[in-house]
Image (cartoon, rainbow, N blue to C red; front, top):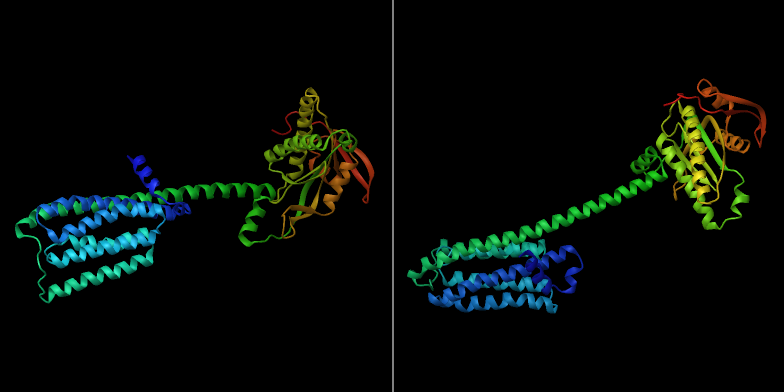
Length: 425
C-alpha cells in the first residue's frame, strides 16, 4: 500500500520538487491532501443530491474537480504556493458559503471545524508566514460569524430539518476520519523528516569521526583538543624526552635501481610496519624525511620511563625488519636494513604556522639523536650517554668510546645489546 501511494505521489512530482527534501515533503503532503479532500467531498456529492441540500451540491462538485486537478496542474509546472493558496481559498469559500446558508456556527458546526484546519495545511505545505495569514483569515471569519450570532442574526437553513440528523450522521464521522487522515499525513511527513534528519546526523557523525581520525593522524590528541578549543596551540618544553632516528642503510644506491613507484611502495611497507609498533607503545610519530623515520617518547604527556620504552620499540623495529625482509626476499623484492640512534634530554615540541599543521620537535636533543643514527651501524641501536644512564640497569650496553659527530664534537656512544629474557613483559 505504501509503495503504491509513493508511486502515485512520484507520478505527479515536478522536477523542482527534488531540489531539497523539505520542498519534496511539502509537495507530497499537498498531493495527498488534495486527493483525500476530493474523496471526502465525493462522498457528500451524492448525499447532498439525495437530501436536496442544493446550496452545497455545486460547491462540492467544484471542490472535487479542483482537488483532482491540483496534482495534474502541479505536474504541468504550476507552482506549489499558488496551488495551495487556491486550495485554501476555495475550501475557505466553500465553508463560508455553507455557514452562510446552513445556520452559521451553531446549526452546522462541522464547517467551522474544517475551517480551522486551513492554517495548519498552510504551515505544512507553504511556510509559517502563510500559516499566520490564514490563521488571521480564519479567526476573522469565525469571529464575524460569532459576533453575528451573539447579536441575534438568524442565518438561513438551506437544509430541510428532517435531513439534518442524516447529514450530521455522515458529516461528523467523515470529518473525524478526514482529520485523522490529515494527521496521519502530517505524522508521516514528520517521521520522514526526522528519519532524514537522523540519517543526515549519522552521516555528519561519520564525517566528524573521519575528520577526528584524520586530525589525530596529524597531531597528538592533546594538541588536537587544544587546537579545537582555542583555535591555536603553543609550544611546550619537556625536561626529559627520548628521540629516535632510524635510517635505511645504502638507501640512495639501492633506490637508484628501482622505479619511483617501486621505491615508494617499499618505503611505505617498512614505515607502515613501524607505525603499528609505535602505536602499540603509545609513542608519538614526529615525521618521515625521505628514508628517515623520527619518533619520540615522553610527549605530549611527560613520562619518566620514556627511555626504557623507546629501547623496547627499537628492538621491535629490528625484529619486525628481519621478519619483513624475510617475506620480501621470498617475493624477490628489494630489502633494506636500518641504523638507529636514540638520545634523551630536554626539547621543545609543538605546532608552528597557520597552514598544513605539523607537530614537530626542536632542540639539541633532537640534533644529537640524528648524529647518533649517522654514527651507528647496521642493525644496531646506538644511544647517547644520557640515555645510557637511564637504561643501564635494564639493558646491557657496550661502550663505544667518544666518537666524533658532525657539529657536535666528541659524544659518548653505546650499543644496546640483545635484550635479556624476561626483562620486559
